[in-house]
Image (cartoon, rainbow, N blue to C red; front, side, top):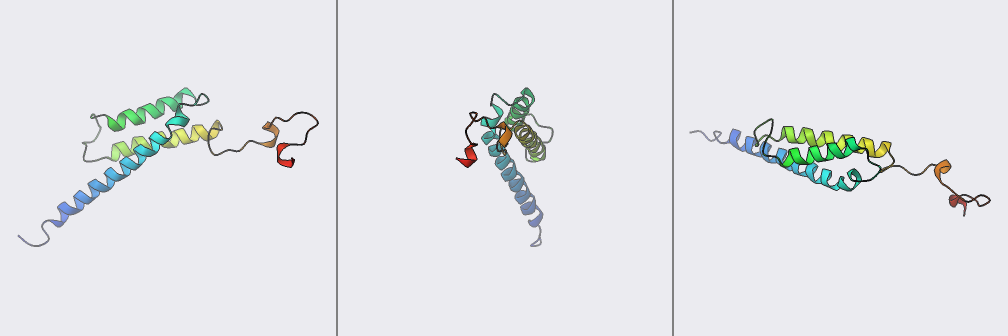
Length: 114
């Protein structure tokens, strides 16, 4: 047996660990978006995308066998991207109120000028 015999197995193991780390990172990120997903202003499609991503990630039934987390990563990225898009579209994250949307009492200067 030569000294390079175990290298492919080590590389495969490192690749599996790297995909697992990415999947765990994305799963935690999706969990953190849960508050936004459960918001009253979030459309039903966003809530469905959140729960599908969450359930698929922990489900033992996968499209690819479990040491390969590429399907989980794909579903998580899709859910996070879609939730982020809907949250920005509906003003739940990443937006500041436009001056015309800020309600002030008549006769008083806008809040920015007080």
